[in-house]
Each structure stands twice: as C-alpha cells, then as structure tokens.
Image: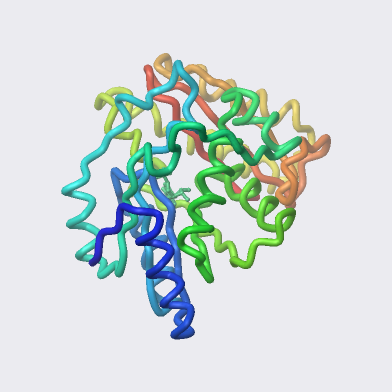
Length: 279
Ligand code: AMP
C-alpha cells in the first residue's frame, strides 16, 4: 500500500489511473478502523480496479464542545489493517494540507443541515460536505462507499452529488454490528463495560419501533413513546432524539409506513452514539 500525504501526490496518481481507464473505489474515513470500515473496503475491492482509503479527522465537522481532541487515532494499527485488506492507496493528509491558512469556501446543504443531526450539531454537515467534496476532487473516484449507520450523511452526500453534478456513484453499505447488535463505531472504545451493555438498548428500541410499524401501527407519536418508554429503564442513556422519517429526503413522517427510517441518537455516559433502522 502506498501512503500519500499531499494534494498534488494524490491528484497525480488518480489522474494517471484514469488515463489507464482504471476504476477507482474510494472510502473516506476518520480512522480508528473497525469491521464496518472493512466492509466498505471489501465492497470497493470487489467492484473497482483500485481502492483508495482516506484517514482524516476533519476538524470542520466538530463543534468546539465536541470530542475532536480525544477522537481515537491509532494510525499504525489502521495501516496494518489496510495492508491486510490489500488497499492500494492510503490518503492521509494533515490539517494544514486540507485547510491551509486563508481557507474560506464551504459547501452547505440547505434544509438537510438543519434537521436531526444537523439540528443537534450545527455546522456539522457543512463540514462533512466540504471535506467530502474536497476529497472527491483529489481522488476522483468512480465509486464512493458510505455506511448506512450515518444515514443522514448518506442523504447529504447523495444530494450534494446530484446538486453539483459530481461524476461519482454513491454506494451505501448496511450497518455492521457486533454479535449482540451494537452498531460498530470508532467511539465505542469510550464506553465502559456497563455503558456498552446499556448502549444495546438503542438497537433494541429500533427493533421495537420496526416491529410496531410492521404490525400495522401508524401512529408516530405512540411508536416514539413506546421506544422512549423502553429506554427509560437504562439510566446511563440520555436520549437526544428519536425520529421517524421518509427514507428519501428525511422529512418527518406523520403516518408511519414501510417507506420510513427510524433514527435514534443518545448519549451513553459522555459518548454520543447514533443508529437507525430501515423499515
Ligand atoms: P467514520 O470513520 O466514522 O467517519 O466512518 C467512515 C465511513 O464508515 C462512513 O461512511 C461511515 O458511515 C462508515 N461506517 C462507520 N461505522 C459503520 C458500521 N458500523 N457499518 C458500516 N459502515 C460504517
């Protein structure tokens, strides 16, 4: 695996690959890699000539009160995993490379950045869309791979690709979970054993919501209340939101149906976790 740190280095490699008509699969990550990331990589390896992974903890998507400084950065371990997966290129720029002095141009999704995660984390999706567009410009991928775990992020990226006519296909990969159902996340390392146990209630409540909808319940308020009620037993869980949304545009639905996704976000102790389930 070749490791690239510079903008020019990355652009030269991908432009040479395109001249040779190679397809490029790209997986943007913030590192601290786990089996969820590896699933995205294996999808890319299956469907492209060349696979590029980026590791960049993007300051622009963290607010000042969030966990940027303590975000895990086990780079040597990540490199080993990527070597094992036979990734062709790791793009690992530093912050100054991506945001040089004087940087001022951001991509801001309009409505999508003010709802759900965007409401709880102002500025988050402008940070996400901006870095992803920059990375797309450097890597020039044929296919890019994103995890369903960050459902709103997937919708934001798809919208940006449509709006800005970007020549890349967005592929969404189902959430990878531990055996007991916990969605894999780089932030799970922050959980104590007790917190980890209680964190399972997020997925359990999503399963409960899905069961209620599939059983014919249409009353969104009632379904949310039942999910909330279930979570009450878990004292380390502090719910941020549960919403039932249209799967295409994330508008909040009035009547629950099979075209919906249930999204949940909660603090487990000090760690903020997100999860979702498609009905
Ligand atoms: P991150 O490093 O957390 O920014 O994630 C990089 C990519 O991996 C994003 O597209 C995430 O949605 C995806 N991802 C994170 N966790 C999982 C998971 N448990 N299953 C599938 N994809 C995931």
